[in-house]
Length: 139
Image 1 (tube, rainbow, N blue to C red):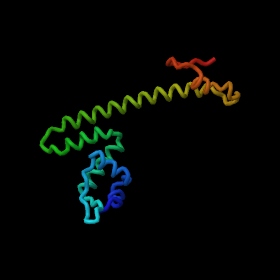
Image 2: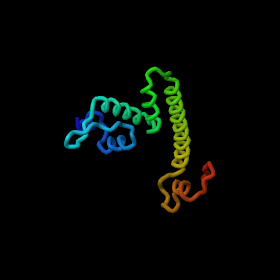
Image 3: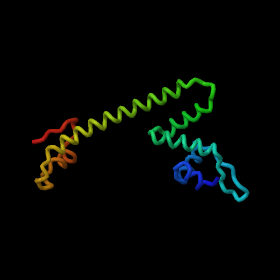
Image 4: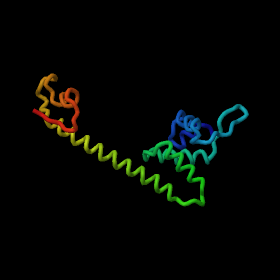
């Protein structure tokens, strides 16, 4: 199959497929006599795996590690578990950071009544003009 069909079957853009080939995440396809790429079902399967991992937020390096591990059929899956656990911890840390940011933004937004002139806007004052010290004070 051609690159267009591979893109259609996997939902991955052609430019991304070419990038994955360039960084050796996807093996180079066979070439026709006219030098067109021809992809196999193995490419489809690997690219679907990469896409699922990307959808779950795994980095390209983590995906490469997981794919390398998947080639070792007899090995223990302990390292795969460690990669997944580290990824979950990273996601949970990001969620905590986002919750803190949302809390601060709610505090800032709650101080604005929308009736002041821009020059007196408490949101802009807190975001742009006060030195960040970890907490917000409103007068």
